[in-house]
Length: 363
Ligand SMILES: [Zn+2]
Image (tube, rainbow, N blue to C red):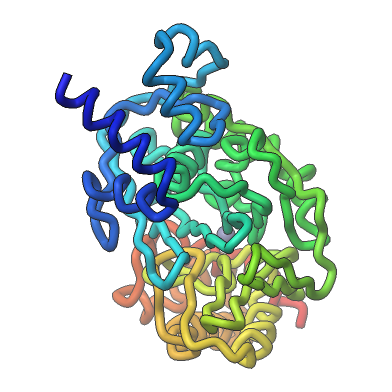
């Protein structure tokens, strides 16, 4: 009864003071840098305005309040999600430095959201419906503003497979002009592969949602006194990398144009990536939120380790090719001096060597 009374008081208080939503939500979760622990992962697919839904849930029977379709996410050991407010109204969930597993629900990319005066933009949605739904639940503990934009930085599954959790939010899905094609080409196979690796239950609700707003060069969106500049890059990490820049706070989201901690993964062009990094470094940011690692690093300083890795990989491969070495030798030898600097090195370096060997062989 005491609990019900205090909830009722909170709901009424929330109705009168906008800021209380956030403070109330985090009195139990202590936000800045703290772990927001989730108990159970039964997700309601549709999230109406939290305030209204709290009132409905409080006064009506659970049957009425929960009549909507539900997707039940599996309970795994890794049930916590850490979201940090890195700057005013900018929140980041740093990804785990892991490969896809049953336990991590593919929560391996660094994903974010930005709150403006009118609406919210989500920048990458995580690696599964359940990962995205978890982010949405955090968003709804902080704000009831509509989500106007879901921005995907590129097509890799750890960045886009949370999209379905935002499908009913009425947001426009945004990406590089080549993203739609990449999702159509690869989406199905990604989903099959992840289902095989992680299991069907872990991928419940997950589907490919391609962008409807395509960026070919640059575009500025406005969330209400919060402008974000989107920019499409040439072939680098992939052939459809998109960055987001907040000109007011001088923060750039690079997607996987920048890896931190996690070994960089070449899926577009090694030389293209080095070239585009030069362009990227010209963006007058002070801080960066990378596609892996982070959550917030100094710019352009944070580019250096990745640049060293990509340059070392290029130099080693050129040498091996010049000496008539094979792809197998390249896998064993290229960039191995970088091993200690990166996580998941064994998982990705040999693959980078093969992909880039094929690229450099004919230069
Ligand atoms: Zn990626």
